[in-house]
Image 1 (cartoon, rainbow, N blue to C red):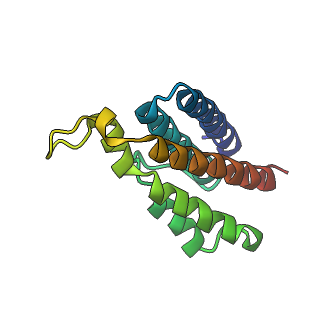
Image 2 (image 1 turned 135 degrees about the horizontal axis):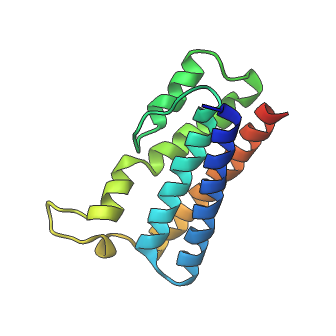
Image 3 (image 1 turned 30 degrees about the vertical axis):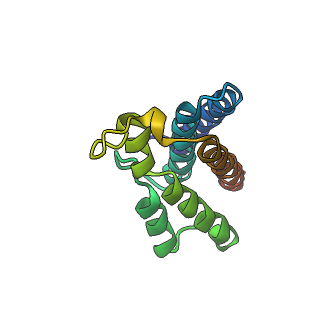
Length: 143
């Protein structure tokens, strides 16, 4: 494991998925936009986690990010950024991953019925903020 290389790799994944989310939004592919935005946030969070150790195989990264804060291993200058990233990971976490992939199986609503332009816009905004926050944290620990 090389924490810096792992973090850099995850950040590149986040940036690539963010570009796909932007393209999906332009093409009015709302479900695809939300899906790419969710993966963007997931990889942005994993980029930060990678600096501190191995990642769990999960789509729910709020807890892992929160533990980093609780342990006090995150520099004080980045605490607010980490809290924001935790919030982004909560907004576009495992629930959204399931919904964009499988839809609402209880009510037989497929994923394309679940997401609107407003949902896609909000997800894209969160993804953009998550990447910016992850970049900031990456830059701090890469110096």
